[in-house]
Amino acid sequence: MFLILLAPLLALAQPSPAPDYALLGPSFASGKADSAAARATIARARAALTRAPGAIPRLHTEGTLPGKGIREISLVAKRDQAIVLDLAMAWRLTGDRAFLDQAGRYLDAWARIYQLSFNPIDETGFDLMAMAYDLTEADLPADARARIDGFWRRMAAGYLDAMDAGPGHANTNWQSHRVKLATMAAFQTGDRRLIERARDAYRKQVMINLRPDGSTFDFEERDALHYVTYDLDPLMMAALTARVHGEDWYGWSAPGGASLPRSLDWLADFARGTRTHIEFAQSKIQFDRDRAAAGQTEYAPHAWQPDNALDTFKIAALLDPRFADLGAALAAKSRRGPAAWIVLF
Image 1 (cartoon, rainbow, N blue to C red):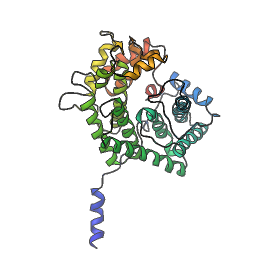
Image 2: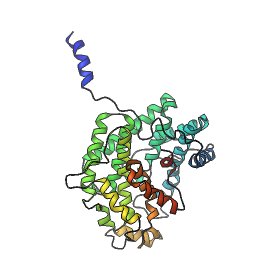
Image 3: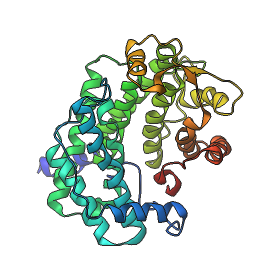
Image 4: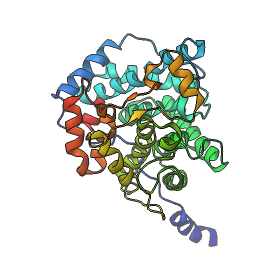
């Protein structure tokens, strides 16, 4: 009898699950089916309906130079990440089950075949697959859902365990990408304990990677705004994921004053052209020079172009309306548009 009476109290003591989607919730793309971004997305997805998934057991591009076999193989396989998100968005935009079925094949293939390495640079593109799963999960077969759910749980727990272990690169962009992947995967599971651990990891990274003046550790080390966006974009993805679940991570400030809004303000001066910068001129990392010597001219000293921050400030505008005009101005000057999911968000 005592256990029977105690059971409801124990249930109340357990953290309630969060809605099990990462970022793209039920209202995604509502009213935007006739937009240019929607039409372009549907066209790309239609072209992929007969393309076989390219899942491989391991991706590896980090620290590799052009021409390395695993790098080239991985770059081809990574094309799946954008393709599956196009397929999932097309499903939600049109209701055509051909898009759903093909997206499900891609997601299930990666969940079955890929072995997580917990290298966040190699695996950062799985954020696109998490968003694709957001849009298809409810309509996929139960056995596929079980495999894919297990994949996200392994990702969330594995990255959080790695961060708790204090690995190398713990104050660099590596950690920002770990935080993004752990956060999106944690919210995808709906597991409150994983979400709480991801929140703590986000705050630790803000404290040690972002500076009170708005600059970042990576800017000091790499002398490149390229790496500032590579710090801020994944942290914003984590904050946006939290935002759609009712949590304000974006507005959190470290005790010393570092915060995501302050770092975006710092970068905005360069994006508006009021400050300029020569990329990689004083990088402390030999690999940056090696890449330049191997023909990757984007790592040789050159003037940073503001439209390189297009997606950065388009994502920022989803978190903070102060950046809406800057995002629009960068889009007007760019020869490419922002990512379709941002436009359709």
